[in-house]
Length: 247
Length: 374
Ligand SMILES: Nc1ncnc2c1ncn2[C@@H]1O[C@H](COP(=O)(O)OP(=O)(O)OP(=O)(O)O)[C@@H](O)[C@H]1O
Ligand SMILES: [Mg+2]
Image (tube, each protein chain N blue to C red):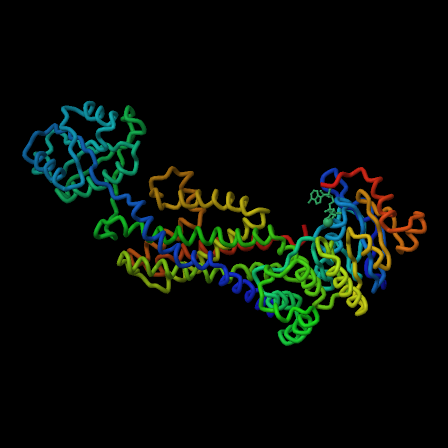
């Protein structure tokens, strides 16, 4: 078994004749914060769903936490956390109830859930709102809670699909503090974002254009090779080559 | 197993927080079972009868008087011949023709048996066939040696349809009141609707808001997910069933003649089958609208074919076959048997096997068809 968190070789997903993800290859190291960038419709979510065992690849190979995406999806699922692009905690359950449910589904004991859940709520500063329905929380809080629930069972890898979409700058900073502390605990972070300042926080980033990975390096190296001052410029240079119109 | 506990806890929290489900659990059975029997009252009065009396005897006159005074019939004509009477049917003035042959009185007195002909208008099926049934009952009351031959022409011009014997089985419905027949049926329909829709809509709603994706990315087992949905809604269904039975007793004074335990046994198995059906639908649908349409489509077939509206005996063979293949048919039959006739488990054992079969099949298909990875 390799010590890479994710290995991806020519991974492809086709919807009919349309190649949403087109032969992407990359590797993610353990403990790394890997930024997965690309314009709307580039294929980020589609690629991520394959890696999480939510959808079958059309072709290519990939392992996540050492498990094969075709045959060992349930093993992958036990070892990862996933925060989807669409908010998907239960809005009609309270903060505590959501934590309890997901903790239980991932096989934690009630005592563990109680202890760790309490710590987590304190750390998020949600003690006042623990008994509130999640639907009543502001978006920034929801997203932070959602992330914390995704890593509550201490997965090896966490997949975050645009976790900070629509969130204010201050909360985004707090969110990234959470990501850093998860990475410090050894959790590999695979994150998509449309914010270039966030891209700078990543150890390495890949940029997808029309289903293909067109660039992959550290932010510093990327700026260097594209002779750009900012990540914005790098992204712009790549993204304008896109044929695909975002839908 | 521990995981299932967490799933159930979550479902119960959501159910008991949802006012619509709570209202549905208690109000729906009460409202449906009070209102529907009024609307679906098939009791027929004012059945229009045309007489064709070829005998002109005291006896034939006495028979016609008896029919006229029974309260259910309106005499629309004393015709010379069958053709003239049929003309009344064609004009939609008569529902039933009773033809008394020549020698009616003589044969009854001398030989102790006689045949009369009854023709029933097949267009207004319900009214006429019930009317025909009533008429047969009155005739039997008049003289048990009467042999009633019924014809039911496809169209009124076709008189070659073979005579069939009318069987009017109201002996387990002693007061001949329609509600005794309808109310248990409505209870079944209620359970059918709830079972068929509730799981389908619930799961598809999770698909729509995206929470199912969050579930599918966890190491939850398929059977855990399915049981996690099945058990809470099964309990909801059993509560509805109980409320329904209570309404049946309190409002209509109908208390099951047979064993309540057997009734609950059937209700329990039936609900599992119907919930499985809903689960199966949810695996095929992406939106609540789709699920509604598919569920509704099958619910219509199920109820129309179930013997609730039309007697299964009067269905053509192909329809009867579909009827046998729907769980509703079996449950309606059983509930009527247990509630009205007092049948015991030994009489309805086959139906139980049928329902268990349906339950296993539908839930098995649902588990098989549920995909955590698309
Ligand atoms: N189930 C599907 N069937 C057909 N086409 C699909 C399906 N899912 C995604 N696509 C298409 O694949 C392409 C990539 O979609 P994807 O959601 O992966 O993009 P994305 O990079 O996540 O975009 P965004 O930044 O908007 O989230 C899009 O053109 C989308 O319409
Ligand atoms: Mg996306």
